[in-house]
Length: 134
Image (cartoon, rainbow, N blue to C red; front, side, top):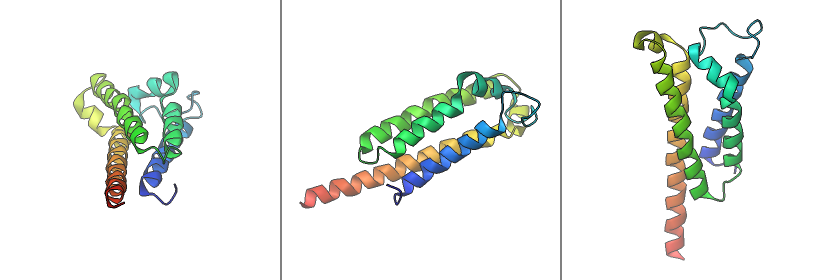
């Protein structure tokens, strides 16, 4: 399980979301300035976006024997990220959206999920090729 590269990518994604949970606290006195994650902050706090994301990905790490289910879950995680980035650009101007550090979170999450999916597909093709030989 842990020697697979996709598990490392998923754990890295968990770590990033865990840092977001820590950095964005519900009380504004103790959290980072409001400029971080801008208007997206209310969606993270109100809907427990990062906490659910962490839980789903941790469950997905332990489903290493079920590659199809892992792929489906990862593809479904693209949907809230896509709507999050649409909402991110909808509530402010495009120029101020590109200056916000929250955009790095979205691009990094998309990238990590994409390379995780591609590495799972590679593992799946290796397993299928070995099954043909037997």
